[in-house]
Every structure is written in C-alpha cells, then in structure tokens.
Image (tube, rainbow, N blue to C red; front, side):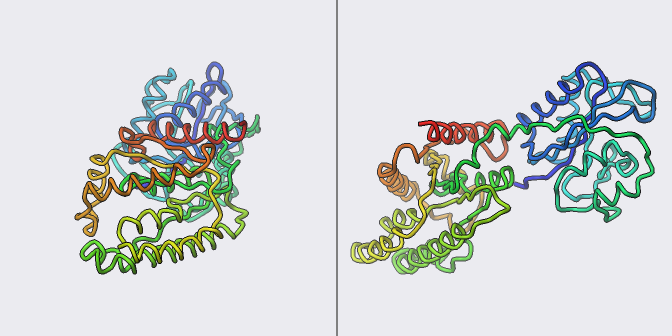
Length: 381
C-alpha cells in the first residue's frame, strides 16, 4: 500500500489560535498520518475579507488515505474543533481551517477536490510557510519550486514569523540508536514497518534483497536440491549488504534500520539443510558473524501462525504458496532460541497478531511508542 506525502495548510484567527493549530496537528498525527515536517508559525492579515489576523502554517504528512478520504477526515477534524461549514461564496473567521495543498506530485480534478490547490500560487500566507518545508517535487502544473512561486507572487501582504513549532515526532528518541534491526517470521510485516520508519524518521533503510535471489523460487519447488545454494547466497548477500551499508556514515540519515539481521541466515539454514551441510554452513557463518556490527536494538514482530499464513496469502507471491504451518513454526522456534541469547536490554518482542500497522494508523503509532519506550528504558537503565 502506498505511503502518500501530503502538504496541508493550516490557519486560525479565532480564540487561542496557536492552541487550535496544535490541536489540529495532534489530531492529524494521531488519526490520519505521521506529521513529518512543520513550518514555523506565521501571523498574517486576513485574506479576502476584514477580520482578525491569522496564524498560518504548513505541514507535511505521510498517510495511507487516498485524497478523497483524506479530505473527508480533515473536515471532521475542522468540525470537531469548532469550524463552521465552509462556503465558496464568502470567507469567514474560523477556529481552524485545513486545506489540502499537494498530494504527492499528482494533479487531481474531481467534483469536490482540485490538487494542487488552485490558489496557492497567489497566496503569500501559504507560500511563505510552504517554503519552510523540504520535499522533492515541483508544482506539477507550473513546474516551479516553492521559492520560485514565491518570487513571482504578487501578494504584498505582510507576513511575520511568530515562532517555531515542536513536531509530534520530537517526542521519539529513535536517533539515540545507530542501528535498529526489525525481524519476524515470513509475513509478519517487518519490511512494511521498516519502510514506514525510514520515511517518517529520515532513517537509512537496509532492505533484504530476496526478490533478486534466483534460487528462491527454485527452492520452494525443490527444497532438497536448492537449499544449500539458496542459504549460502543469502548469507553472502546479507553479509555484504550489512557490512557496506553500516560502514558508510551517512550525513543525511539519523540512523539505520534493517528488515533483517544476519542471524536469520543460520535460523533458516538449520531448518532447510541436512546435517552435514548445516555443519559446513555454521562454520562459514560464525566467521562472518564475528565481523558484523550488532544492532543497538533488535525488534522481533511476533504473529500467530494462522495470521502469518493469511498475510502470506494476501500478498500473493506464487513461490510462497507452498509454505506450511509446520515450516513457519520451525522458523518461530529458531527465532525464539536466538532471542534467548541476546541481552534483555537489546531485544524487544512485540505481539502484532491483532495489530494492523499497515492500514491502521493508530496501531502503527502504538508500535512506534512501544519501541520508543524500550529505547528510553535502555538509555536510562
């Protein structure tokens, strides 16, 4: 499922304006999408009508909602915060106003929604805070950056910066660690979780390259014949990838997060290889394992076998159709045995059997909070 990047413009000119905007951001973050960036807060004159000055700002969020559903959810937040029904004919003072500005770099024309926002290039109270945000695309119609739109804007309204806004994500302490490994059985959702963490926290992703392994489909068809070359090729690739990616210091990322750790190679090899092959494999593995950087935190996503089989069925990979409950149980046992060898302060088991952190934003935030508390407790203890 796509993780959409969306820019919103927020404004308020009634009551405690800053409080209304902060409440709107909190509701968006908790129920709609991860608030990844915020602009500063700006005071601007009312635009199009005479009223009290506005506080305006822009935010960048990541969400799984499509544009139409997102618009509906934002209207609910406006109403919840005291916003009266919007009208096209006239402007009015408001407790909070939330406008969709960009939805990725898409051009959308429907009866109830036009994106990019058709008036953004004319409004300095949108362009100034928008220019605080960092995103890759240009205005998809005019092919101009925000700064270029601002330079050509004829709006001469006075815009005054009030203060910077603390991001909801600033309560997370993921940047205190250098290397986070997320593991789990087949179908547990580890790759999806890592991809979301990567985008939301500006982390460096290390994703397993299983799709490029030519032995994997062959192994599921003839496991006895292809088990050893499959496991050796996985081991070599994981060792090379982790060594290369973790050795390179990246100025642009706060930490590295991987959807596997090299020890999974030994777990799977012990299940798939015969006794002699397993002995040879372990010898090679132990030489490599000594040199690999250990994760600061090892997160294991636990799911019951029935849930794993359902997830595997949903994603529809042909070569996974033959995976059995017995095979998954053996993998789970191998992970459990490995976890017993880890220092308690460096391992976290999260039961995600009844959590859908792909489609349910609240479940995703709960998983993040669990990880965050573990990092805090390890740092303080």
